[in-house]
Length: 296
Ligand SMILES: O=C(O)CCC(=O)C(=O)O
Ligand SMILES: [Fe+2]
Image 1 (tube, rainbow, N blue to C red):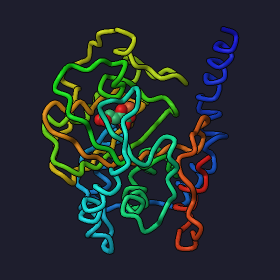
Image 2 (image 1 turned 45 degrees about the vertical axis):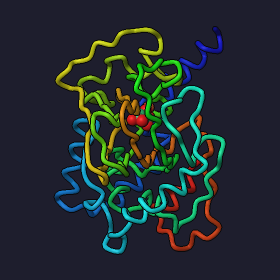
Image 3 (image 1 turned 30 degrees about the vertical axis):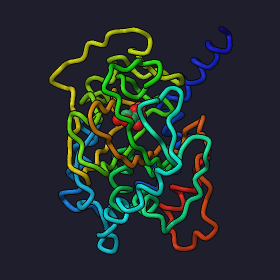
Image 4 (image 1 turned 90 degrees about the horizontal axis):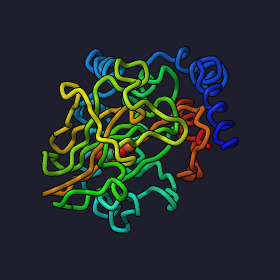
């Protein structure tokens, strides 16, 4: 009890602008301010929508650099191999995950999934969203398991409305590697539920344990007009802040294939080490070094 109280007080202080921005992320903010992004008008609009709504949808081809125009076909070709050793977990029986959890990902800068995570435009959009340079927390490659029946929230956490809680803002980029329709378990986001959005406080973020109202048996009541179901062809990219309300991954008829890139701010306190740095990082610029090296 005392510990819980102490922890609550700790996060209350830690989450003030004074600490979160002024101390923990001071360098990341400064770097961002010193290095203006070079987004095109179209890309800037994606970042603006992301900031306003807590999500933005686009296509991978809008984001790739000239030298990486074939990256999506490379990703599609490598997907099978990556999924080879993928497993489900106790509280996520609906999704098979590779490159996450106990398994440590050894970052290979030539790997197409890593190349995607290091794309200039994606980093620019995430930096604009955060107002600071990000660090990369995780890259996962995942594929849903088809389950036509109703799911139990206890064994399929992500398929029920929840907020992730490791940080105040948790921008992710989801790439659909297969076409996703209603039967594939699309990703859902509640527009405006991100930090600073009009629905920030609705089933608000609980730090550090997270808020999963449906897991606690609560029947959530959400404004229908703000529920966004993300359907799209293979190649669709969804930026979303999973500190906002979201769910997804209950495929009733057809599998969904996704690559998920997760960017956190540097002040993240209970970070799980998910990858090992590549031996040779000489090709990386300052922001990419920051992205990888500040990972705790
Ligand atoms: O698989 C999904 O669509 C939900 C994913 C999710 O909850 C997350 O990435 O935080
Ligand atoms: Fe989530």
